[in-house]
Amino acid sequence: MFEQWRGADREVAVVGLAKSGVAATRLLRREGVTVYASDIAEGPAMEKVVAPLRSAGATVELGGHDLERIARATAVVVSPGVPPEAPPLAIARHAHVPIVSEVDVGWAALSSASYAVITGTNGKTTTTALTAHLLQAAGLRAVAAGNIGEPLSGVAMAPSPPAWIALEISSFQLHDTYALVPTVGLMTNLAPDHLDRYESLGDYYADKARLFLHAAAASCWVTNADDLEVQRMVSGVAGRHERFSLLGPSEGWYDRKARQLKFGDQVLLQRDQLQLLGNHNVANALGAALAARRAGGTTKAIAEGLRTFRALPHRLEPVRTVNGVLWINDSKATNVASTTVALEAMDRPFVLLLGGRHKGQPYTGLASLLRGRCRGVVAYGEARELVKKDLDGVVSVVTGQSFEEVLEEARRLAQPGDVVLLSPACSSYDMFTNYEERGARFRAAVEAM
Image 1 (cartoon, rainbow, N blue to C red):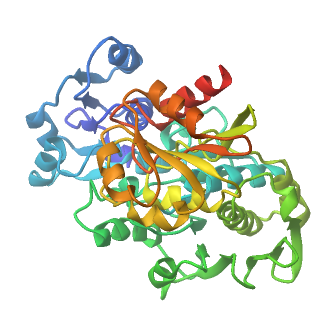
Image 2: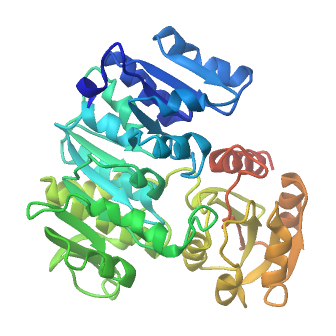
């Protein structure tokens, strides 16, 4: 790839300068590729972000894109946050300029590594972190990358590349990824999401299916046996298939009666030794364990890794108990399906903080999990009136304007022994920079109580 892109008359355009675009630009410049990088954002913060790129020899434009220059580019590297219909990508397609993801750029520099590639609608980040942790527990030089922390192109810049990479990849990234070949691919589940960006659910699932683009007899796929959509998708996909289940025996499964995680007939771990809330995290653990076993991890090493893993920030993260009320940060729940999983994990009465920027799914799907269990919903953000419309009559719904007001309403509603759960079912972009900022604001407020 890099050899094809080098030359005095060649230039690669990088569109979008969030973490992945910055990492791709740095790697391309290291490899001697001429780069024009652009973003619609501007201001002092962005100037600080792009200063090292200019120092590395890239041409950087903020506040817009030079469409004529992009149309003349050798290739376009796109950040996942840039929608396919954005003018720079539309002009590139019209000019027949190849469009690829940052993942393919990182892969070009790290194709000799082994990859556990993780996707799905929910649970990707926890499963990716778990997989990397289990690979490390097995004695392998492994890192987590992709949507979890460091972009793949950033990993490629490290002085000593890892032997294994647990790579979280979204549907947006898969849309433009062509070269990546998983050593083992893992799909957590499928549910409606991102319908604010995709024209149909079928289009969203089609991008997820690109995980299997290079499926061959030597491939290994770890998938959710309990998810019918996933099993329909992998039916007929070439390679070895290993499945995990919460419902019955499989290659990796949860024996509810014995409260044990198992590999077939072999006990892997007692449920009480896994320090994660919710059965969905049992499924995540089983998927990660199967991937680690495929990489050569022993049952003993994998079990020890599961015992020592702790919840990630913003994913059913217990913050602290205040006056008998446990406050839980699940800010990463940015769709209805993810909030459903969080509600299923609740084993006591709760107050739910729900809202943000609407993503196209109705909130009526939460009704059965709220009725009789939820003290009240505090709705906020751009979606608050939609939340109230969908759930009023099912449960008491109050609205809050500022985030501080939302937390005060939650304190008023909660009783000793309850949970206050931030699990928004919406994106954060109406009030916050990202879900991390939303969760950090929640955590800081709770710690200050």
